[in-house]
Image (tube, rainbow, N blue to C red; front, side, top):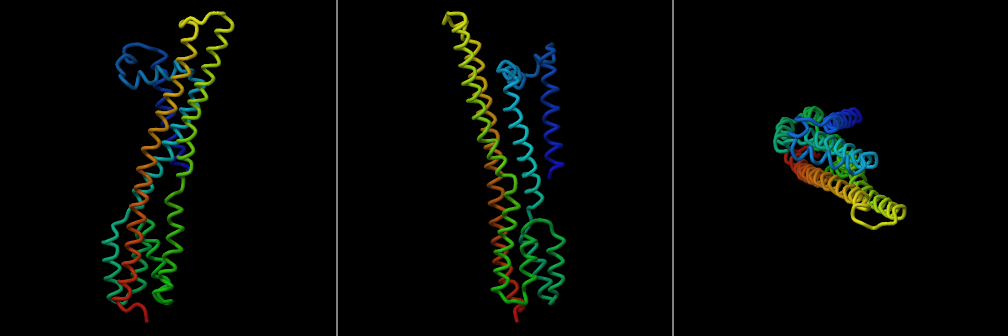
Length: 243
């Protein structure tokens, strides 16, 4: 997981700062970049040194999101097909073969079913207990990294609001030095203040969308895992595994 996060973070950093060079150099290539070009220009106008913190939140948050999405897609299992194969093995009295099918199938559902099959000798109560206990472990693994995504969702707008406060302070400092409250004096500081807020909110919105998608993906996997666990007990009972 760490290698995936590092790779994604470096990729986004390289992509952004490569684009940053285009903005700095100007030219026809910069003019043809469209809406994304405008965002980069506004990013620079909003004091890029401070707004780099917001950018880091976006990059790290996206890295965790992409890592979770890849992991969850790999963890998705066709439970009906898996249960059908287990049923075939148990119908032949091959409990070890059913275990091997679970071991060779990736994903948390197969791991939970394997744990249930391991406890077949203890009866249906032991199987259900093993499934519930190991299911909790698998849920924890599925939700791994979500706390960091939530952290970046919360921090990004906070950093934006902090930039707003700092920009307003700079504006009032300028008024104090110049002794004039004309729009041209305070416009720069207020512009910086508003831009940091906008980018902080944009980052939070993007990460929130990914977060909700990941949570819905986890809920789907957990629901299928619970359904297949209940079905496993029925399959074992139908094939007289419990004696």
